[in-house]
Image (cartoon, rainbow, N blue to C red; front, side, top):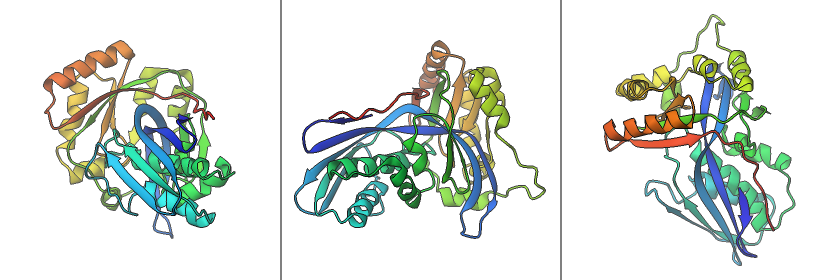
Length: 302
C-alpha cells in the first residue's frame, strides 16, 4: 500500500509471498530454469520509503537486518539506479528499508522490495511511467519481481516473467516457520534434477481448489519440486516440516527455494492455536509468523 507522507517522501508496504506450487521443467539455453509457479501474496510486510534529494546520489539504509547489503548488490539500490539512469533523472533519493520479511527464506522479500522501489522511484522523481512499462524492467532485476505488481495470486511460466494474475481467493491462514539457516537459490537449483520423461506436475487441480476456497483440497495439491533438493543441502529441514505437521497443520510445504516452511490451517482460530503450540515448543532460533493471504488493493494517495 502506497501513501504520500509529505511532498517529497513516498512510502510503500511490500508483501511477502509463498509458493503454493512450484515445478521445474528444465534448464533453458539462457541458463535460467523453465518453471511453473503459483504464488500467493501474504500479510507479512517490509516498509520502504523514498525521499527526494537534490543531488543524484542514492543513499540507502536498512533497519532490522544487519545482513542486508547496502551497496548495488541490493535489489532496491539497483532498481533505483536503473530508473535513474534509464530515464536520465538528475535527482537522487534517500531510501530506508525496514526489514521484517526474513532473507534467504523463499518469501520474496528482496524481489517485493525491488518492485516497490521501481514504483516509488517513479513517484519520487515525478516520472509518468505505467506499471505495464515497469514490468519488463522488473523482470531484468529478478524472475520473482514482476509478480509483486499484482495483489492476487499469480501463475508464472518461462523463467518467471510470463505472469497471469489469478482471481482473488477467500481468506487463507498459515503459520510460517523459518530456521536460522538460509539457502542460496542457485545452490538449490543445482541440486534439482527435473524428471526427463515428461511427467511434470501441473497446477490445474490446485487452481480449481483455490477458486472454490476448499482448504482441504488446496492442502492436497500443494507441491514444490525444490523441496527435496533443499533438504539434501540442509538435512534438518525435514525436522522443520515435521514440527509444523505435528502442530496440527493440514499440509506443510517449503516456499520457493527455502528455507521457510508454511503450514496451511483451517481458519484463523486453528492458525492461532497452531502458532501457540509452535511458539511453546519451537527452538528459539527459529522465526515463527502467523499470516493471512493478502487480497488488498494498493492505493496511491496524493
